[in-house]
Image 1 (cartoon, rainbow, N blue to C red):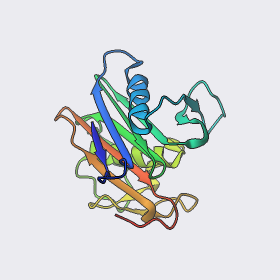
Image 2 (image 1 turned 120 degrees about the vertical axis):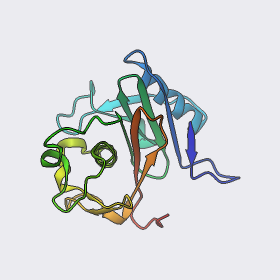
Image 3 (image 1 turned 90 degrees about the horizontal axis):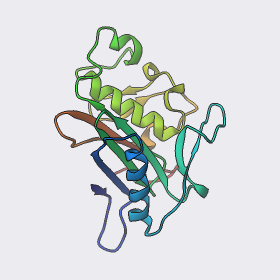
Image 4 (image 1 turned 120 degrees about the horizontal axis):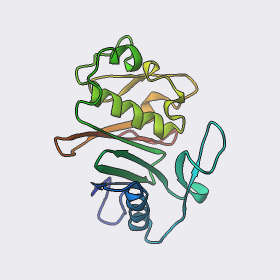
Length: 189
């Protein structure tokens, strides 16, 4: 597990964890453990779907948004994040998953270079999860530069300079990314 943004006297602003997953509930258990580790107590994690309002599926959340949470699954791996820095999104895919003919047509911004399609995909999906919209936003409308900065996206989304994006040091078999949307007026860095 990784803690990012920690200082001697302050808890980390972001915690990320991953582990092998052999059953569907592994990601949910990892997220619950990460929330408990981050805040020091067990908090109930619920679901909400921004599209239909269902509580049976959709983005995980902690009541009153005490912390922001995200999770992702790939065959054999669970990935989760907890943030007090702002809304968070994570995504993981098997390495090479997005290397298929036509990837650029469904996921690349017209001005975006796509040297490693799977890395491009997990970065975009992590960002879109952090917004709460997920793939309701067309990933072709999201332009990320080589320095992992959001250059442009739809105008109703947070200002691009509020987005922090990082690739994750997973095993060679997986590619992952984490994104945090900082509050308006927060310092970059």
